[in-house]
Length: 258
Image (spheres, rainbow, N blue to C red):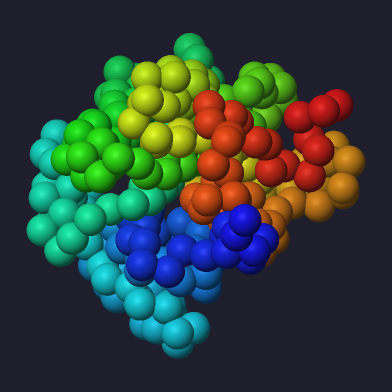
């Protein structure tokens, strides 16, 4: 029987994290890297990726940047080609995301398509590439999708409308369950985290306007912090979750229970 700490050890594993240059993606990179994984991070902006690699190196974490635009049609395959040319991918964290603030009556076709392309369409195509080219041939792997509490519920009419974002994250939730059922035979686990509000570039405007209201509605009376996603991400990306698949864990300070 392995020691408990060995169940969380990621030494010798490679983790690809999309949207890994900042925010939740970088937080997850720190967690997986601290436990031994070699980190591959992707994002659109090369300069932000380079800064993230330097930051991780300062923590003693081996990381490499892979610039990629998950909003473009060829983004998923281009990224998969580049990363797999350097070796296997044992862990895939689908974190890249986009949002659009507008009420349902005001959401344009272009805005809807942009959010869906990044948050679910190209998430699927990257997962498909990594799954069939790396994880299935290797006989196993870990996939962690970053959904959102927005995919588990609606939003009050007094708040900024995010109908496209909510819908796309709801799709990520059921994509996680469906793929887990299909790929379990290959010893691939597929799970998702559903974060509540964390400080990020994406949430900055909402938190500035509604931060006090959001905090007041949380049972823990706070928004997410710099370490609050790390433990859950490590669990789902390590052998410790060997008998957990198709599950969605809300990391939200309890906001979805009231």
